[in-house]
Length: 344
Ligand SMILES: NC(=O)c1ccc[n+]([C@@H]2O[C@H](COP(=O)([O-])OP(=O)(O)OC[C@H]3O[C@@H](n4cnc5c(N)ncnc54)[C@H](O)[C@@H]3O)[C@@H](O)[C@H]2O)c1
Image (cartoon, rainbow, N blue to C red; front, side):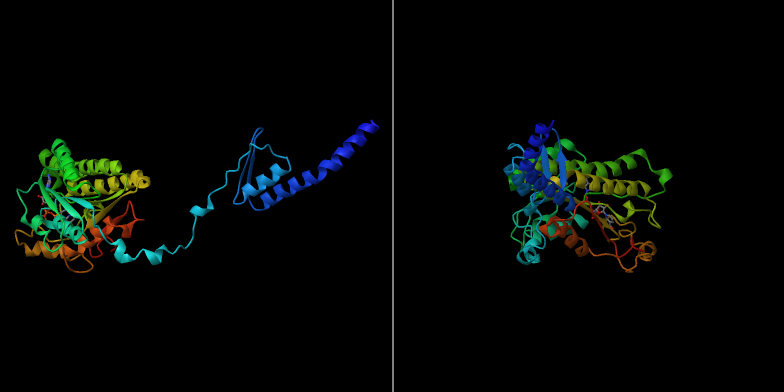
């Protein structure tokens, strides 16, 4: 017994410093909230300075040489870089060299948005059912960009496929999409016919989905990200006093859900998806505008906190901003351009 105990004591004296050092290191690890995960065959230390700890344990031959350290790459987490000084706002707000596809860009809000994109240097492909739109060609004047007008119905998948193929071949890329093609309704809900309901849902919802899908397929192939802006409405957030348009509001609510979900799905691929909810703009779609129904227009104006209708120039800048790098950390967001209606 006695010689064995002596042998044990001698060995202990030899290994004691190593054990104490190891315990000390483990204690330090614990103190600095370092995760020590041990399995029978491997030990993984995760810490900012885990590698040096593993090196020390291996030097002491307390860990097999094969044990590796998985330490987080701190270099990725750089706080307060100088990028805010080198990336100027002027540099970020540009669409130079990009191709923007604008559905419903033949007139109204879509045309204004196409103008905004052209002013920032994007080449413009407009998709609309109108026979032609001289205004689209006029976008080239003073901007030096290229435009092409496609007469196509956003509910027709086959025609859309060949249109997007042509856009890609003609312009070389598809980087931005704005889905402004849309229709409204009127009349009491109980009287809405199946045709009316189908038309609104297919143009406002299915049209947006089909165009987004074709654009995203191309953006993913290009691998350089992209930006999509869908057009919802304040009606997508709730009912509008004085308007009987439940189906229209349903279609615009669907756009909000679609936009958020798609934004999350595509976030890692660098494709951002946001929506705009316009309030009241006087366009051919606005009920009562073409018929010059002053009483109706005044009724619409009343609940607007800013007490006026919006101008199309007030949406083009927001859409253009959402398409540029100036909004590079914004996705799944909805911006109401409504004079304060949704805030009231
Ligand atoms: N004007 C407003 O106050 C207002 C408010 C909220 C939301 N919006 C939305 O903004 C978008 C643009 O509306 P707007 O006021 O410019 O209306 P608008 O009628 O002036 O423009 C809509 C455009 O979409 C096109 N279009 C319609 N059906 C199409 C189809 N099947 N395929 C391709 N193009 C088609 C039309 O030809 C037209 O050029 C719509 O989605 C609308 O719901 C408008």
